[in-house]
Image (cartoon, rainbow, N blue to C red; front, side, top):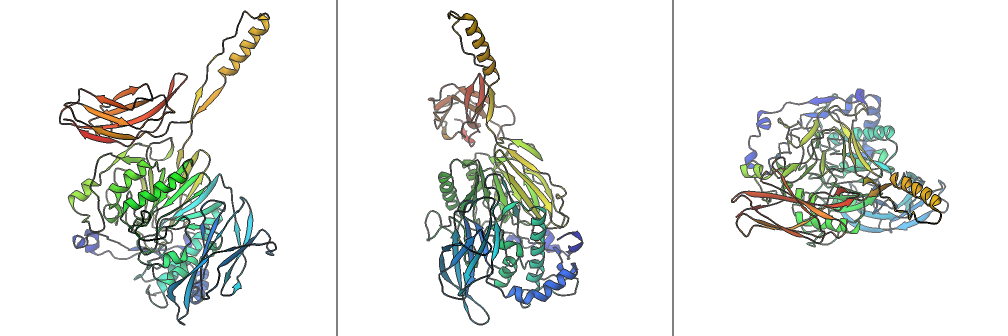
Length: 633
């Protein structure tokens, strides 16, 4: 969809919405201003066609959804059927489906019935052993027969790109009135869903036309407005592009209340069972999950589940199974670091104090968020290392303690756009609406952790490019196809340090053939002087304990790393390590504790540690540990 086909409408904001009157009565203070939206009825001929087909579109509850598999060689399928049968997918590199391979899956009965009282079944199949840069043709077996052949093309499995979108939220433009004078209802004929589904279909087509090499899409949640509405799912899954574009979906608050989500998507490495360490607190929509693609580990969390121990267990499992990937990307819906008026200082940040240190502990590079219907990107952030209160959905988000406790981060970079090399901490993105079903205002005062933000009242999407050493994010205005005003491409470079090796061999000049020996010595010396050695950075250090048991001292203990030369200790009384920082070097890797002396009694000391390797008299440092603090006796 391009600018001439998108028209933004602004309704009237009531004074109570602006001031948040009545928010205290609702502990999770969700303002949900929806005065801005994109009206599909201004789109001309294509809108007329879609309107004429809407009855068919909204009643087709049997669309196939594609999801990335457990790794890049797999593809997951899910679909509804009205027949009890063995789910099957056949796939071939030949359009005639000759020599097709058939994969079988599992079927479960749902509680969904149509107007004719027909019960629906959820079918799931995983296709394996895919090759990169290959065109495939597939069919699903549905209601007793093989369905129409569809095309799926794999791209590179090493250097690749993917789309990142937020809150399609089909049906969220409810209660608006379009240019044709129609009220956007949520009952038959479901005009709100019709409006948003039309925009979704066209925006995806335009995005893929402009960026045809994307391998899949990540959605940060709220695929639909009503998680139990099969009409809205029909509009979402009915987008033509989704027949060939796998989507890694996230459970948003609007998805979380219904099992329909889990029936429609076949997420890899999801979890079964109640009250296990990977499912405790799970919502009706399902669980966390994870997968890899190339050198990236993707972890998707349902943050409508307030049990952060569950999320930590899933992250730990995913990381332990994939310890050598270069990049770690986490997606969740609620924006613990965003800049929208509606959520970024209220319900969006309820889990900030718990999730921030987990992102630190597991070296998460990028977090992709939704929920606040605005665009923003943070600076590189880490936890401040302090102990903070935990909150849940019953918390009063306007309480002074809630706001102060959520100042639980350190800003580790001042780069607002462009490139950062081997940065410390995590960068957090917030995605705007990808359909225009509703937009929110930016919060009045930009938070200090926000590097950039934008609200142009048009849908947006981001393209994330991954190479061997870089991960870059560029965000686009879906109405124009151009880079979003107020945004810049952000690139993380992660590479090993390169050290010039000037070591020279000593040649025995007492050799019988002294002339030959001298020539060989010169050649050897020249070659070694020109040689560059690539040295891997040490791993992130881990502090085990920091205590103050004696007056004006603190004892620090950390985990040993046998592969390094030594350690650097940084300590200060200033929380952010911005000034008055002292350093202590430990020259043996076998030393794993130190006592810091002559400290200030009664002051709070902040400490962090990093490892280093010495190569040709140059120190190569790893990342600092999570900051710890102690009050000095």
